[in-house]
Amino acid sequence: MEQCLQSNYKGLQMDNIEEIIKYTKRLKLLYVEDEIDSRAVTYSILSDFFDDIIIAVDGKDGLEKYIQNANDIDLVITDLNMPILNGLDMIEKIKEINKNTTIVIFSALEESKYFIESIRQNVKGYVIKPLDLDQLIDVLECVKVDLQFKVAQEKLKKEKDELENHAYYDILTGLPNRMLFDDRIAQAIKKAKRNTSNMGIFFIDLNKFKSINDTYGHDVGDFVLNIVGCVMKSCMREEDTLSRIGGDEFTVIMEDISKPQDTMILANKILDALHQPINYKGNKLSLSASIGISVYPSDAEDASELLKYADTAMYEAKNLGDGKIIFHSNTSSL
Image (tube, rainbow, N blue to C red; front, side):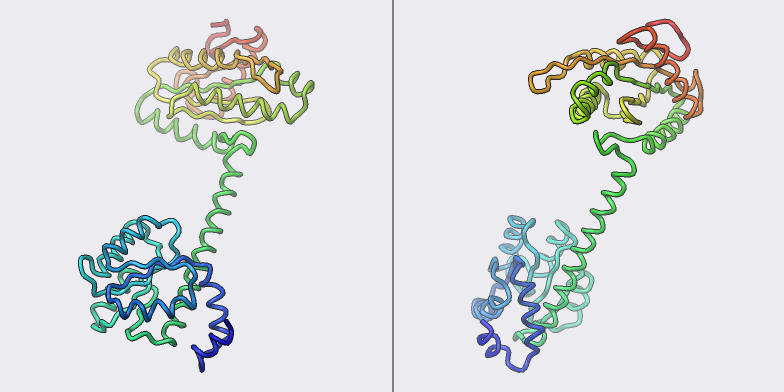
């Protein structure tokens, strides 16, 4: 391989070429060229740099093959002057599918309008035919930098998303945590004010959870909390927000209700769902819940007060026994 390279690329910087080849060998290339002789010559050169090459014989074929392999293609090298669908039109359609696709043009067209259009399309290189190896090496170096930059961007975005996820979501259940709950309730109050609508705040505490934790251990307790989160979420509308704010305590923001009693529909669905035993390795684990409810704006218009009143009502429900629902405005069991 090294002898072959030295023979083919005599006079060029071998260290640079070998580094580029080491990188490009890992890439999947879509090569689009309608002219048979040019395609054969260029393919023989590209084969030194790429092991995985898809060949397309015109712009229409290139677009179809891109669509078929869009998730795998790392680089597109294309001619411009082609029948059926020219290279620039093909590039535009590819960019509509994925604007970040890395594209290089190999063309004999030297008019400035083609260079200008390639810049507009964010093409990463324009190599004039017949293929010049110095130009090719320079362009592939740019491709390498471009793709490495995109990988770095994706990594940074993933890390940013993970940090945001940890900041706003409960690690165990994946539900919104207290920080995100505070933001959601603030937004819900603004919306309720704007629409002059009611909103219910639930404070939910699990009964018998401590017994499960003490008897079976924290791993089982974590399993139960995950199941509970899924069960309660399945009872709710898409616009409702379920949060875990700590331990075995959950909250619900129920938006767009016409009257306070509308919250009872969801509260009873949650209680009924949580009364169903959870099966863990043949053991039936029984739970129940106590629910306190405050209502905007009749109980309060402030987020902290609404949550405090729902919390107080939950403790009143808990004192009455398992499976009770109490409104802040009503201290009797409903």
